[in-house]
Length: 457
Ligand SMILES: Cc1cc2nc3c(=O)[nH]c(=O)nc-3n(C[C@H](O)[C@H](O)[C@H](O)COP(=O)(O)OP(=O)(O)OC[C@H]3O[C@@H](n4cnc5c(N)ncnc54)[C@H](O)[C@@H]3O)c2cc1C
Image (cartoon, rainbow, N blue to C red; front, side, top):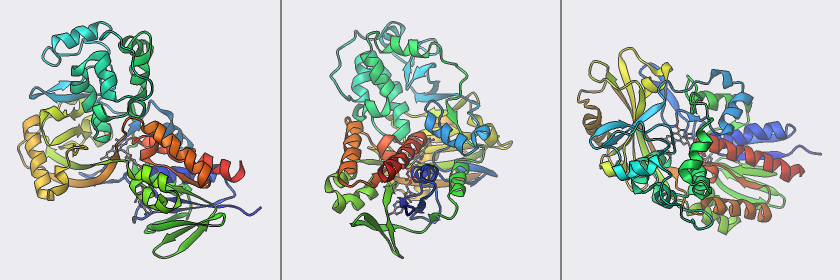
């Protein structure tokens, strides 16, 4: 039997993972990875800043779900992973930084001991001290995070805590977000006969409070990208932007500016709006589904300030800014407090973000304007008015997919119709299982296994 030829389009973490597992499950096959840019990794970029390797996008990944750690283990990187030194973050609320109540599940506090008097109204505290609001029968199926949380623990917890925390993940709005996609544990808890709060409390009762929440690599996310790329030998083709994909008999024809590739199977691991264009003629309904996914844009500006001008609370990893606060910035991470390997003797490194699904002012700003606006917010929140020692700007236009209610089912239907109507063509990436790095890894890994089933099933 001739060995199969399989292409992966896009060398972000989803595409690289797909290629990595393809080589494992189909060792006889030839795998090629076509990447439009001149470097692999997509949104995982690490570059030098203040003498360290500092990430320009994702800097860590969730430890609570298995896919990120499992991949690192398979690559032999697991023993090198680190977890944050400062585990708690704050919120900018009532003109000051307030610690986010702990423990909490996606912002829903499980006890009120660490909540200061002016953080939540007394009615909200009373609810949280008991079992929440009287349990309502929630409609079947997916619901918005807003609907679920408001119905169980009230508007204040949703607006002051859950919305800023979940909004920090994909720049979305909790009232518009699919709970099944973004917070399945809250949806399940809300429907539990014991009620959301009691069920979450019982789930976390035996949890190890010192278990790591996030993993990172001291060399940055680039280390993961490099390890994946190394495992691929010379299969990765950079500067190879795919222009068109078509079918010829049992083969897929992939067109770049330079050449045509003919393959037996293809995994499209580009952002959904790029995949949508490829699918427009192959399977228009799938193209339409992917094309309808909205994306938020973000910008991340990394600053270093002399420690003589800025002192941050080293017990905190940074802070989030709720929409209601009316600031331009959405979050600030204290890199040196969060990560021991980024603690600089002279400067404090801050990674400051802006951009929400309903706020893309940063897209229209020059670099100078962007920095000026963020510095003005840093003056308000941290009181730092001095010149930064160094500044690095990273823009992430259309980078964060939004997941409306029903998204999980829509992606399931999409995968099923691809499987039935264009077997051998699969999709992966942040739009499918979630934006987090582990979710992208999961989607790449699943696509690789599904490809093996298709070719040898
Ligand atoms: C500012 C920011 C901070 C984040 N922080 C975190 C975090 O701390 N933790 C976390 O878990 N997640 C974080 N995320 C989310 C996470 O980084 C991304 O969701 C994830 O990296 C996306 O991976 P992907 O492979 O799906 O897509 P991408 O990384 O977008 O990769 C897609 C690839 O396809 C390529 N491509 C596009 N068109 C073509 C074409 N025509 N031909 C060939 N190639 C093409 C692109 O160049 C790109 O390399 C963050 C995201 C952002 C923007």
